[in-house]
Length: 396
Length: 213
Image 1: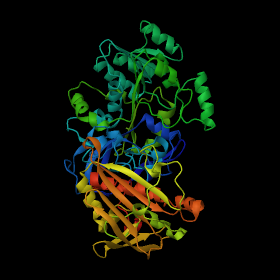
Image 2: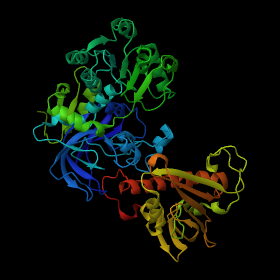
Image 3: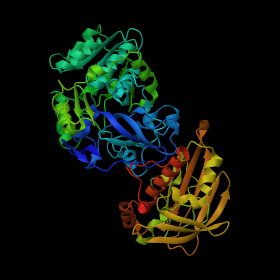
Image 4: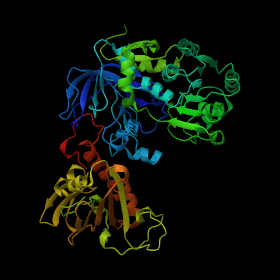
């Protein structure tokens, strides 16, 4: 089959690789109909995530048609159309029983899980197409994919919904939703969101649906700020305004009740601390550039909530722990427990209460995936979301 | 790795054999040490283990299944190869003893006989290799109820002599056959099998038969 493979920093290629097959009893094989490039794929593209190997197939946002089922798979049939969560979860361990799917004990293979135990103190769950630390599973930017524990994750979608309407259930829609849920929004709350990429935009949409009185969006790309405004957010362009001052002034001197870092480890911007972080990163003294997180902690009101859907992988320094402690902030974060939110969000899409298609800027054949990565990385203003279609011969 | 009796066994230490050394002393038979320690940390978690020749490694996992069921599956020695990466065969010889075949790092299988020393259904199984073992090893696995109905805490502990001293242990680590790593991985496989009915893998296609180990 054809698949998008990783070969190093800014080097991804569409190649012919072996077809997947059923390995374990709870597997299914999916024929991919749509798959997307995620903002977190750019961390891989930029070589920021350890334990990648040349030839790894990327992609953790995908959907398709079940073409083969393992002997223990119940509830899924050949021909069924499903969206697959990027988090692989067994459904049987303690964490899955608490609906903490991204903390699943069993989905990371025993010979792969040691890396995360060394790095984080515990073995993390498996993820599709996201380094060997999270299992080394082949991703879905391909014609076919093997889906383990298929009786737990994939959700069948009704025929009357197009791929474009439901594809984002795989990651960014529930991720934005959980980011807002982690803000524990109360009546009259103001929520500030750093980063108006897909997750940030869905977090804005979700926060407003959950009753936030006001959402303030922070970015510097005009197109992204425009999309945020379109959802009903007020906006701050950090290249022209002082974010901390603006947030205080816009909230009656109180600061946002909850803050969302939807940027993560690769902050943009020419700030003193970001330049410092870049230098340390170059010297390998620090792995992540947490400018946004620092600013969000400083901005958050006393006793407020901090939600971090943005991806961090390792260590940071100059962390304003004093602000966190002295102001009594609550931090909630984590990889998304996708499975927990799928039935609710699918229902909301069916009822037309949530639209996800506004985000899509490009639809490309799988063969053009490398170009899709380049555009998403380099033209972030115009490129809000790239969808890849394995079935397409050429750009339509 | 190996271990004979049908009761359980920990394959781990075996693979070290070619590197030298011998595992020693039976955990179950050793004299209690640190009797005056003012803490509950297990001995293997001490920063400095008493260096009277053998080293103790181990690992605990919580398995979301009832204690009797977990015990029974572990007690089924001939099925060890299902989750013990380096064990290719466990053949019962009689009620207490079994013959083990373990794949060593060099690819040469090691065989030995192991015997059950203690067997308390639902609670504990302890074993030790018999005289003929090239690498002497011993260990025990205990089962206790996890708090809050979370299943069973399985605690595996083995005693061995680091082959060739610290250099030998380093070499063993390079082969990923250091007993602690092997114990951790084998226990993880056991947990996966008990909880999910399969062992997670990122392979895209079924493995060829002898990929085991």
